[in-house]
Length: 290
Image (cartoon, rainbow, N blue to C red):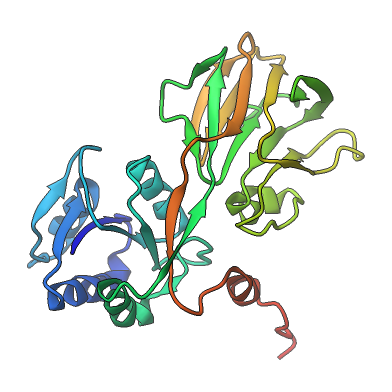
């Protein structure tokens, strides 16, 4: 079993949990490959770093599984590295909330055994694709959570002209606009008042950020929709953020957002469902009064 490991390099307080992952993989004689940034962190932090079979220094690699050790941000970076390789990803949460990295560190031994025995299911998570002026974005064009159009830090609000399938939708005067997948509905989109969408729903979400007009509400679309956006800004530029990777863009461009033509494969353990995750992570039914 060949495993690619990606991790956060800011987890010195989580070293015992990280060690347990490597120990469990060694116990089943797995081939272990580690991304360079995480490997550099381990070798600079540990006197005796884990024994591995190789370092991943580019996107030219293969594996049976990928492990993301960290929080949801680490999972998103792992998905970026995996791209269209169809390598299933398991998120091991050593961060905080963890909707994507949902496996708790206390489950590590059991979950590695499940991987070895193929005792899991795979859920396909849809992504978004960004085109600019009809051409695929030259940087990595896909986002698992969301693509956000945002004003720059100290700028006035921007005006985002949105069309869906060629029909004009609205001019959003706002701090920004979030276009999210069902996976991203529990991320940035949730914080701006969007609904939670089930992962298997074939939907996209459009949600304004701090709109000037309070009747501008989040909108759920079919995931076959083609969303076109043009931006007006006093500063003549704005930000485009793909899963937190931000780029400054001029107002002269036209953006197009569609569903990507490939998915990210997420490993789910038996008994781990989205509804259970919601109830646990959002503490539904918990009385804060004690």
